Image (cartoon, rainbow, N blue to C red; front, side):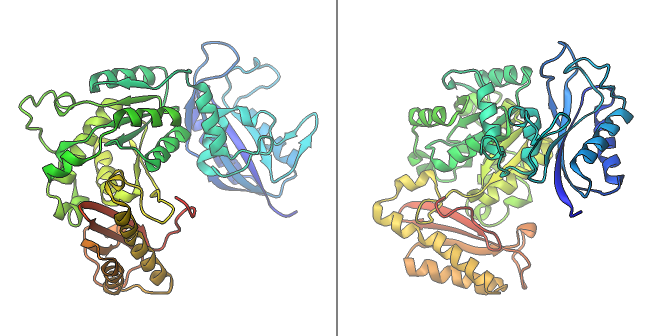
Length: 455
């Protein structure tokens, strides 16, 4: 028999839950005619249905390749449940169990028998099954609804949130109390820190946070600590009411803001101690904007302490900033940092709050940044690996457009602090330039694939 793909949901809320789940995975790994392909992270969830007061579950999902027939594979799963102490004949319906193994899919087979129904009949209503499945196969199309797994997860999470309008917290302390209350209810918070003047790129981060967490919250704070030019700080767009409307439409649960004194009440004189941003802050933006990344690391650390999110979401457009924030999260021990692809306008211009400061002719000129980056990617795909020639190509494209280039460089993302000296195995091109009075940045993974034509 030709091997087929089988998806299995795993759960445990009795005994050593992790040991039960990992033991089941290992037993399947050692079973004849079964190969484990992928295993999801474990998710902590509350028991649904059944007796009250039962322990929380640890849930996961795995993909296996098997030559066993579907009923034989189901028999194998039920035998494992018995070996780990489950007694289906005596257990309470939806009661606690040391091991629960459900066959979700068996290739594309559809069955409706007394012992086995495929795909699993309650799959699309069970968030505790879909969440781990989403980590492995977010784009998998569910047969009954026709929705992708990630879309169904977002729908179920939205349905669980209490109906109501966006909560607006006017100061950080109110936001801290709100987040603390949501975490006490068992909610996982996805957090998007912003400086406001929101656009589709920010809303994409909110949607990503909603797809992976129980709720999303957003901060809007134009942080003076990260501005080296007072005029730039003064002219940065501020549109809080418009931002709130956009966030409410996107399903965000809470928006908060505050002043520098409110975020750092311990520094009454305004002299906020700066955090060391780490080695990723050296060069490029760090060299041109002294103190910028120290300001970023300082405010992000405070925001993380206030919100205590499970994950925080950042856009790849600010690539060097993402490296700084990943270093910060590593030092703090939380949260998980999710870097989302750069959102682009129809013509390729990276979405930025500063774009609204561009005149129509300047907006057209600003497209030169993305055009230069994609020209470098085309050269990479044709075999160019020399950093100097790639940088010369960037400079030529930008020069033809007449933008004021601050840097146009190529870096190895795994050795970001070093200027490359020889042929590159991987490369990210990064640009900073001024178009009129507006400073813009953009970057591109030269070996990667940008998602979608309109971003």
